[in-house]
Amino acid sequence: MSNSSIPKEFLLLPFADTRELQLLHFGLFLGIYLAALLGNGLILTAVICDHRLHTPMYFFLLNLAFIDLGSISTTVPKAMANSLWDTMTISYAGCTTQVFFFVFFVAAEFSLLIIMAYDRYVAICKPLHYGTIMDSRTCVNMAAAAWGSTLLYA
Image (tube, rainbow, N blue to C red; front, side):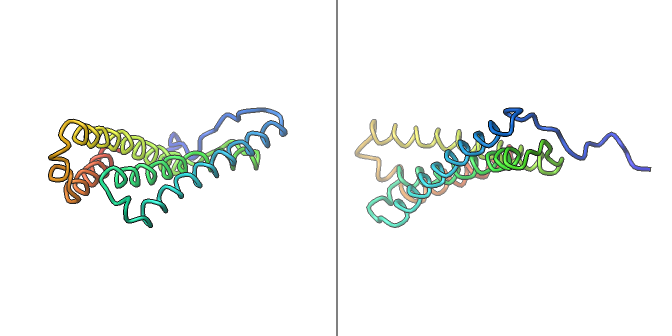
C-alpha cells in the first residue's frame, strides 16, 4: 500500500483570471526573458571574443552573466508556459528541481558579488599589488569556490 500523503503536483495561482490578461502576461514575460537572454548573451560573447577583456573584472562579469542566464531560465519559462496554455499545476519533481536551481543560482550570485567587491577593493586600495593578488589562478580558484560552495548550500 503506497503512502497517499506524498504530493504528486502543486497548484499555481495565475496572475490573472481572464484569458486576455494571461496572454498579456505571456507577452510581457517573453519580452523580458528574450531581453535578458540577449543582454547576457552579448556580455558572454564580448568577454569571450575580445582578448582585451580577459581581466579579473570581466572574468567575474562573465560568471555573473552565466548565473543570470541560469536564474532567469529557472522560473520564467514555466510561468510563461502556464500563462500560454492556461495550466495551473507543476509536478513535485519539477517544483523541487526549480527550487534547487533557483537557490543555487541566487546563492552563487551573492557569492560572486562578494568576490567582485573584493576585486574592486584590491584594485582601488592596492593598485600596485593588484596584478600579483588577483592573478588568473586566484580568480579561477575564487570562482570555483563560489560555484562549489553554493552547490553544497543548495
